[in-house]
Image (tube, rainbow, N blue to C red; front, side, top):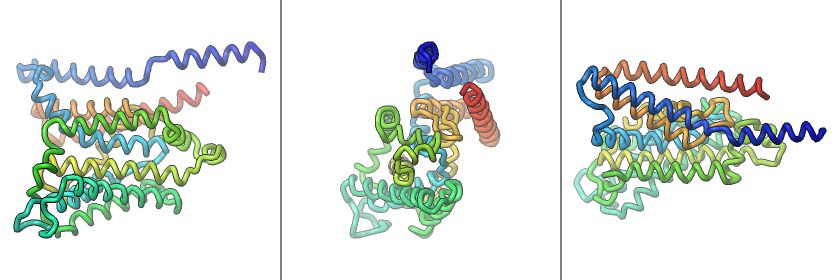
Length: 340
């Protein structure tokens, strides 16, 4: 390679580093959506959409659980996989953790195990999520089953377990310590803490480098010495663990657990990740983008409710946005390949 070619490569790399973060594009979408709802609010409702702190607080609290799941799903998608089991794992973890968080009543699932310290049901709920993730990862890594099929199987199995656990009956009456997990601003704090931790892990650790490498080119990652199978198990285990955490927060916030909890949460989490710029082709995505994507989903749901638009139309619009985000990702991939 000539000196001129080296200089050209250095200049190109320098320009690449100076590019604005891709999250700015997603942030502009967030601001645009907020502005649209603000204008429609004055036109259709005669009041402001954004200048209502209570509405915005409720919105953030509602999306915090989806955000926790989306952080794990983002890492799975970066590896080139998918996780359809998150919502069912939320229900399973919520049911199991709540059964060990009850006060002494005649409706206790385990009468001899009531009034336990909050750490006990928390650890049990996290373990449920972790085991589900480990099964997903092991099936994908060691049997060659496509992620779609493996996690679809777990989705059905976990939901069935949640229904079987108490024969479809809800579980209520948690201890005050357990209920406090879902009260006030704590769900948001947990979401942001999880997002910061895994943003750092993906950007500055070997775990993150291996995750991106596997998503970009699994064969090249394997040749370079990365144990792809073991790492995939880790990624899916983390996704399951975070789904379990989301189940705990959901149960604590509602102060009850039902087998129908978490329905369609996996699709909302995938949508948040894709809207946030995570490529379904693998190898690209950031937690910061996922956080913004989660806020966009929450903003849209809150805005539609504010404008009194039926939930049916909300689902239609959400589906269109997901498809649009995927189409945009396809065009980004084509542009990137041409540039290469």
